[in-house]
Every structure is written in structure tokens, then in C-alpha cells.
Image (cartoon, rainbow over all chains, first blue to last red; front, side, top):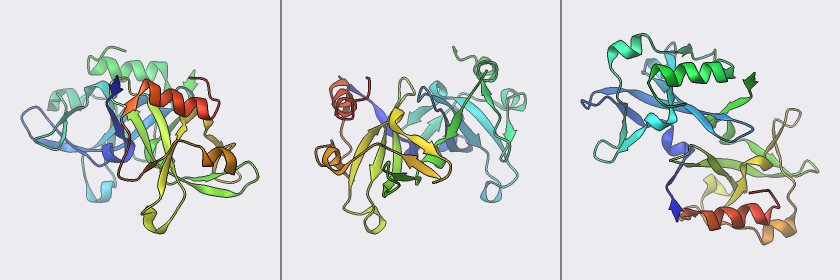
Length: 112
Length: 112
């Protein structure tokens, strides 16, 4: 059976929408565990001039649902959840630990 | 414990060398299984003007060893092994199946 796959450079730059079709931002890059080859999360950014000064929000990979009509990902996020969400500045990608991963997944209610 | 991670956009474009330090090409993109979030392989390309007309060689993720001195990946490939290696043209990314994945991993003698 064929597995649906996607190229990393197709994910990067893809627009992210909320469930009402409002534009949230775009995927800047994916963070990959070197040993296992697992995508730990997608780093969502909310724009800003050339992405400068904007925070990155780690989003669990399973949350990304591609919508062909919108040509982008739809993620069930609302302002309240985002306000409290884990984030980091562009130049400070956090060390990835199980604790950190769990915190990110827990925040969005995604099974770890 | 922290896991070593890497950003997808740092992998893309990284130069790939053979074990003698000869430049082979570069990583064009990663191919990711949508369901599991696992990187299936890195697509190696061998240059050519803007990458046009060159084949892509799927390389098992565990084969990529980063060499800080070279600032690139060192992959134990030789001409003979590459001549027989699975490849596809730029515009024909193959469907990813277990059979295909196994063929790629087997070719390079990497455990599936």
C-alpha cells in the first residue's frame, strides 16, 4: 500500500488558516529528530517583515490538515489558546526534550 | 534528555560529500510520511543548471552523517553503487510504498 508523503520544501511556506478560514500565518520549517528521523513539530510563524522579530510556535505534526480548496493547512487554533502557547524567538530554537515535546502536545490536546 | 534536532530548511541545500571529501551533490528536499511524520528519505541531486534535468536519488535518512569540518553530509557512496541506485526524474516523485522504501534501504545496506 502506498503511503501519502510530502516533500519538506512543499510544507515550508504553506499558509496556515484557522477553522473559520482566517489566515494565521505560515509554516517556516519543520524540526526533525536526527536519530529517529521523526518530525517533532512544524514551526508556525505569524508574518512580520521577512519574518524578523516574530515568534515561532511549535505545532504538533498531526495537527496539520491540508485543505485543497484553501491550498493551505487548517489548524484548530483560537486566539486564547495561542496566547498561552509555547513559543520561541526566531534565534532561540529550544533544545528538544521529551518534556518540551510533551508540553507542546499537551497544550494542543494532541496525544503524545 | 535532549534529542538532537535539525530544521528541515537547514538540511535542504546542504552539500553531500563522499568519504574521500569529493563533492557529490546536495540535498534537495526530504520526503515525509504524512501519517507518521517520519522522514522516509532525503532526495539527493547531483547539480545541473538550477537542478533542471537531473535525477533525484532517495537516500535513507540514517545514512546522512554531518561533518562539521566540511559543513556538509558525508555519505559512503561510490560510483558503482550509484549507477545501480534507485532514482527518479525531478517531476516524477514515485509513490511511496513499503516495497519502494525497502528497495532503497536494501540498496544501501541500511536496516529497514
